[in-house]
Length: 158
Ligand SMILES: CC(C)(COP(=O)(O)OP(=O)(O)OC[C@H]1O[C@@H](n2cnc3c(N)ncnc32)[C@H](O)[C@@H]1OP(=O)(O)O)[C@@H](O)C(=O)NCCC(=O)NCCS
Image (cartoon, rainbow, N blue to C red; front, side):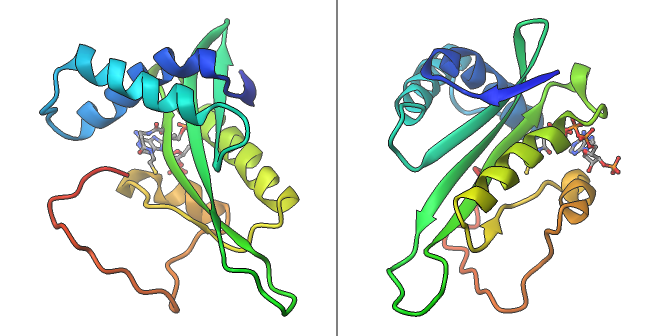
Protein backbone atom coordinates (compact mmCIF):
# COMPACT_ATOMS: atom_id res chain seq x y z
CA UNK A 1 0.00 0.00 0.00
CA UNK A 2 1.41 3.34 -1.04
CA UNK A 3 0.33 6.56 0.70
CA UNK A 4 0.72 9.83 -1.24
CA UNK A 5 -0.84 13.29 -1.48
CA UNK A 6 -3.83 13.42 -3.83
CA UNK A 7 -3.79 15.44 -7.05
CA UNK A 8 -6.71 16.93 -9.00
CA UNK A 9 -6.46 13.92 -11.36
CA UNK A 10 -7.60 11.66 -8.49
CA UNK A 11 -10.89 13.54 -8.03
CA UNK A 12 -13.14 11.20 -10.05
CA UNK A 13 -12.03 8.07 -8.19
CA UNK A 14 -12.18 9.86 -4.83
CA UNK A 15 -15.73 11.04 -5.56
CA UNK A 16 -16.77 7.45 -6.31
CA UNK A 17 -15.25 6.29 -3.00
CA UNK A 18 -17.04 9.14 -1.25
CA UNK A 19 -20.30 7.89 -2.71
CA UNK A 20 -19.54 4.35 -1.49
CA UNK A 21 -18.76 5.67 2.00
CA UNK A 22 -21.88 7.73 2.48
CA UNK A 23 -24.36 5.40 0.83
CA UNK A 24 -23.14 2.57 3.07
CA UNK A 25 -24.26 4.73 6.02
CA UNK A 26 -27.35 6.46 4.71
CA UNK A 27 -29.83 6.20 1.86
CA UNK A 28 -28.87 8.55 -0.99
CA UNK A 29 -31.31 11.24 -2.08
CA UNK A 30 -29.13 12.21 -5.05
CA UNK A 31 -28.63 10.03 -8.09
CA UNK A 32 -25.12 8.46 -8.26
CA UNK A 33 -23.88 9.88 -11.56
CA UNK A 34 -24.99 13.42 -10.73
CA UNK A 35 -23.43 13.22 -7.30
CA UNK A 36 -20.12 11.96 -8.67
CA UNK A 37 -19.99 14.75 -11.26
CA UNK A 38 -20.71 17.36 -8.58
CA UNK A 39 -18.30 15.86 -6.06
CA UNK A 40 -15.52 15.40 -8.65
CA UNK A 41 -15.68 19.11 -9.51
CA UNK A 42 -15.67 20.03 -5.81
CA UNK A 43 -12.69 17.82 -5.09
CA UNK A 44 -10.67 18.77 -8.18
CA UNK A 45 -10.93 22.42 -7.22
CA UNK A 46 -9.90 21.80 -3.61
CA UNK A 47 -6.96 19.62 -4.64
CA UNK A 48 -5.37 22.53 -6.48
CA UNK A 49 -2.37 23.83 -4.54
CA UNK A 50 -2.69 26.92 -2.37
CA UNK A 51 -5.98 26.36 -0.59
CA UNK A 52 -6.77 25.11 2.92
CA UNK A 53 -7.57 21.52 1.89
CA UNK A 54 -5.20 18.56 1.77
CA UNK A 55 -5.91 14.94 0.92
CA UNK A 56 -3.84 11.76 1.17
CA UNK A 57 -4.69 8.64 -0.75
CA UNK A 58 -3.84 4.96 -0.31
CA UNK A 59 -2.95 3.20 -3.55
CA UNK A 60 -2.73 -0.54 -4.13
CA UNK A 61 -1.66 -1.92 -7.52
CA UNK A 62 -2.09 1.62 -8.92
CA UNK A 63 -5.72 1.78 -7.76
CA UNK A 64 -6.76 4.32 -5.14
CA UNK A 65 -8.51 2.42 -2.34
CA UNK A 66 -8.50 4.95 0.48
CA UNK A 67 -8.57 8.65 1.27
CA UNK A 68 -8.34 11.13 4.13
CA UNK A 69 -9.17 14.83 3.80
CA UNK A 70 -7.94 17.65 6.00
CA UNK A 71 -8.84 21.33 6.11
CA UNK A 72 -6.61 23.84 7.83
CA UNK A 73 -8.67 26.29 9.90
CA UNK A 74 -7.10 29.66 10.53
CA UNK A 75 -7.15 31.23 13.97
CA UNK A 76 -7.03 34.98 14.47
CA UNK A 77 -3.38 36.05 14.90
CA UNK A 78 -2.06 35.86 18.43
CA UNK A 79 0.42 38.27 19.98
CA UNK A 80 1.26 35.58 22.56
CA UNK A 81 3.11 32.34 21.73
CA UNK A 82 0.00 30.40 20.66
CA UNK A 83 -0.29 28.40 17.47
CA UNK A 84 -2.43 29.98 14.74
CA UNK A 85 -4.31 27.15 13.08
CA UNK A 86 -6.47 24.14 13.79
CA UNK A 87 -7.20 21.23 11.46
CA UNK A 88 -10.38 19.35 10.60
CA UNK A 89 -10.07 15.75 9.38
CA UNK A 90 -12.93 14.28 7.37
CA UNK A 91 -13.87 11.71 4.73
CA UNK A 92 -11.56 9.03 6.12
CA UNK A 93 -12.37 5.96 4.10
CA UNK A 94 -10.71 2.71 3.06
CA UNK A 95 -12.47 0.39 0.65
CA UNK A 96 -13.84 -2.68 2.53
CA UNK A 97 -11.57 -4.98 0.48
CA UNK A 98 -8.46 -3.25 1.91
CA UNK A 99 -9.49 -2.72 5.54
CA UNK A 100 -7.90 -3.91 8.78
CA UNK A 101 -4.38 -3.93 7.34
CA UNK A 102 -3.16 -0.66 8.82
CA UNK A 103 -4.06 1.61 5.89
CA UNK A 104 -6.32 3.89 7.95
CA UNK A 105 -3.49 4.25 10.46
CA UNK A 106 -1.01 5.14 7.70
CA UNK A 107 -3.36 7.79 6.26
CA UNK A 108 -3.70 9.23 9.76
CA UNK A 109 0.10 9.15 10.22
CA UNK A 110 0.48 11.23 7.04
CA UNK A 111 -2.13 13.76 8.15
CA UNK A 112 -0.88 14.09 11.72
CA UNK A 113 2.72 14.35 10.52
CA UNK A 114 1.66 17.21 8.25
CA UNK A 115 -0.18 18.88 11.16
CA UNK A 116 2.93 18.73 13.33
CA UNK A 117 5.04 20.23 10.53
CA UNK A 118 2.45 22.99 10.03
CA UNK A 119 2.33 23.70 13.78
CA UNK A 120 -1.38 22.94 14.10
CA UNK A 121 -2.93 23.52 17.52
CA UNK A 122 -5.85 21.02 17.69
CA UNK A 123 -7.16 18.45 15.23
CA UNK A 124 -10.91 17.79 15.26
CA UNK A 125 -13.06 15.12 13.64
CA UNK A 126 -16.40 13.36 14.02
CA UNK A 127 -15.76 9.59 14.20
CA UNK A 128 -18.06 6.80 13.24
CA UNK A 129 -18.75 4.56 16.23
CA UNK A 130 -16.59 1.70 14.92
CA UNK A 131 -13.61 3.95 14.17
CA UNK A 132 -13.32 5.40 17.69
CA UNK A 133 -10.64 2.86 18.65
CA UNK A 134 -8.41 3.97 15.75
CA UNK A 135 -8.65 7.61 16.77
CA UNK A 136 -8.25 6.88 20.49
CA UNK A 137 -4.94 5.12 19.71
CA UNK A 138 -3.81 8.34 18.02
CA UNK A 139 -4.55 10.65 20.92
CA UNK A 140 -8.10 11.76 20.07
CA UNK A 141 -10.43 12.23 23.05
CA UNK A 142 -13.68 14.09 23.78
CA UNK A 143 -12.74 17.61 24.85
CA UNK A 144 -13.92 19.02 28.16
CA UNK A 145 -13.43 22.63 27.04
CA UNK A 146 -15.29 22.80 23.72
CA UNK A 147 -18.93 23.57 22.87
CA UNK A 148 -20.89 22.41 19.85
CA UNK A 149 -24.32 23.71 18.80
CA UNK A 150 -26.10 21.34 16.44
CA UNK A 151 -28.19 23.67 14.27
CA UNK A 152 -29.82 21.03 12.10
CA UNK A 153 -30.58 17.67 13.70
CA UNK A 154 -31.03 16.23 10.21
CA UNK A 155 -27.41 16.79 9.28
CA UNK A 156 -25.49 13.68 8.34
CA UNK A 157 -22.58 14.97 6.29
CA UNK A 158 -19.07 15.25 7.70
C1 LIG B 1 -12.07 3.80 9.50
C2 LIG B 1 -11.26 3.21 8.35
C3 LIG B 1 -10.80 4.35 7.42
C4 LIG B 1 -10.02 2.55 8.95
O1 LIG B 1 -9.28 1.98 7.87
P1 LIG B 1 -8.49 0.58 8.06
O2 LIG B 1 -7.48 0.50 7.00
O3 LIG B 1 -9.46 -0.52 8.19
O4 LIG B 1 -7.81 0.86 9.52
P2 LIG B 1 -6.58 0.18 10.26
O5 LIG B 1 -6.37 -1.23 9.77
O6 LIG B 1 -5.42 1.10 10.21
O7 LIG B 1 -7.13 0.20 11.74
C5 LIG B 1 -8.15 -0.65 12.17
C6 LIG B 1 -9.16 0.22 12.89
O8 LIG B 1 -10.04 0.81 11.94
C7 LIG B 1 -11.36 0.92 12.51
N1 LIG B 1 -12.26 0.13 11.71
C8 LIG B 1 -12.10 -1.14 11.26
N2 LIG B 1 -13.17 -1.51 10.52
C9 LIG B 1 -14.02 -0.46 10.50
C10 LIG B 1 -15.28 -0.24 9.91
N3 LIG B 1 -15.92 -1.16 9.18
N4 LIG B 1 -15.85 0.96 10.09
C11 LIG B 1 -15.25 1.93 10.81
N5 LIG B 1 -14.04 1.76 11.40
C12 LIG B 1 -13.44 0.57 11.26
C13 LIG B 1 -11.23 0.39 13.94
O9 LIG B 1 -10.94 1.50 14.76
C14 LIG B 1 -10.05 -0.54 13.85
O10 LIG B 1 -9.39 -0.70 15.06
P3 LIG B 1 -9.77 -1.95 16.03
O11 LIG B 1 -9.89 -3.15 15.16
O12 LIG B 1 -8.66 -2.01 17.02
O13 LIG B 1 -11.07 -1.59 16.67
C15 LIG B 1 -12.04 2.16 7.54
O14 LIG B 1 -12.37 1.08 8.38
C16 LIG B 1 -13.32 2.70 6.93
O15 LIG B 1 -13.29 3.23 5.84
N6 LIG B 1 -14.46 2.57 7.62
C17 LIG B 1 -15.74 3.05 7.13
C18 LIG B 1 -15.76 4.56 7.08
C19 LIG B 1 -15.53 5.18 8.45
O16 LIG B 1 -16.10 4.78 9.45
N7 LIG B 1 -14.67 6.20 8.45
C20 LIG B 1 -14.35 6.96 9.64
C21 LIG B 1 -15.04 8.29 9.49
S1 LIG B 1 -14.41 9.45 10.61
